Amino acid sequence: MSANKEQANTRALKRAAGIPNDVISKIQNIVIDEIDLDSNGLDAVSLEDGQNCPNDEHSLILTGQVSDYKKGNRAVRYLVGFGAGKQKIATNLTLAEKISGKIIAQDEIIDRKIGGLVGGSEDKGKRDYAEKVNNFIRYAIGMKKTPKR
Image (cartoon, rainbow, N blue to C red; front, top):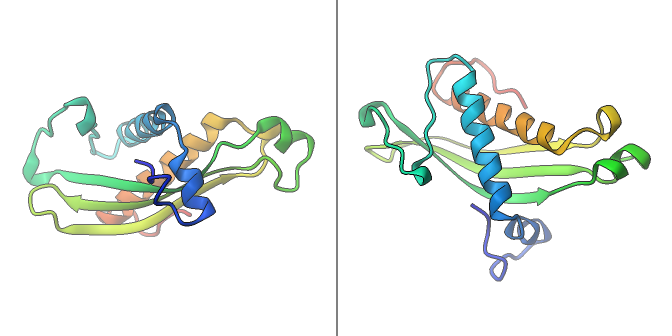
């Protein structure tokens, strides 16, 4: 979920408050797909879609606040370079136990696309961000030794 534009007190938060809802939904869906595709025994469901957790006792809730978002411009990244047209997704995430609400982990997850083959694609940036979120979860629950930044 993005920040409230009227309450945003920094340029980054103002950009985050302007993120379109369809982009937030797309990012959420890509994160769910990344967790499900990882074959790590974790199943991700979206509570906003009305899906129920199959086992509340072993369920975790991932919540977050977008702290910065730049859509970026692929053509500018390709033609100009030097960081122009960069894409950025930054969120402050919290992973908590569903029943007790006990916080398991909190972290800021940031993904930037500065370049890439022919400027890189917008969806590639979202997939890379989702991979970082998945690594954050796996690290928090002890499935991975060190988080990939």
